[in-house]
Image (tube, rainbow, N blue to C red; front, side, top):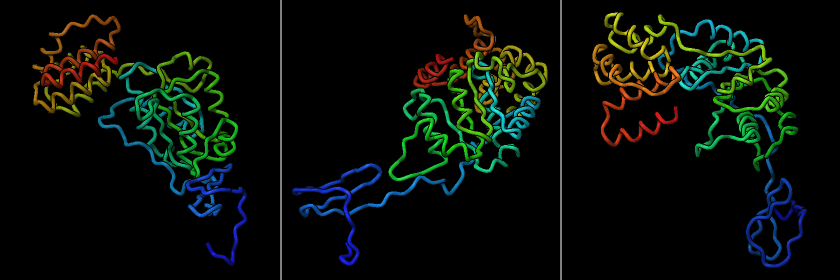
Length: 305
């Protein structure tokens, strides 16, 4: 420390103290000399120097042109959009595709993407969700913990595209989230169809149409005859995730469409929901080609559906 420029301590330390003292937003490092303090200046909360970028475009995205056109228009109008549908129907792929569109890339503050699960696989609480959005756009030292009021002070002056994937929100949470941003579009994917009640800007995704299903299979196979792939698509209820699993398996394991159709027909699902039954069938095809060790891992994934 320069003796010509003394620093007035805001705390008084007596005795032989070593380590760190935190006083409010300030950190103090205390050495082993009796009562000597070196003050470490804090960094004010400020915008990050680089805006967050959109997630990678999904592989094998096919169809959904009408839905994509609607979502892109709503992004340009800074709307909050809710997209619902069962797992595997293509909600995440749709918002990732939309996040790479021109309206999304023109947002001044980039694209904030938040998944429902944290790094340990636990569902995010609403407060944690708000914190992650804040942390994507702002930085401070020490790290600033925000609540709804303090977060809005900062977030209301930003304009990113906010993507919330597989998020569970109450109607109250949805209103609170919208209040955080005065001029930013928000895309939310969820299985909670109740969230769309009375919400104008919402989509309920169903299976692909037959032509899109055939295009998806053709884009990842060798383009064999149309009749057998059409039977495969029908057997898989035109569910995008099921079609992608099967197409990838055909390409990776060099299986013909006829062989795949036979394997799919050989499995009978007890699942009453047709879309879920299609996913089960696709996982069973994949499972039939794996080693015993790989079987256990795939079965655990299939159980989630």
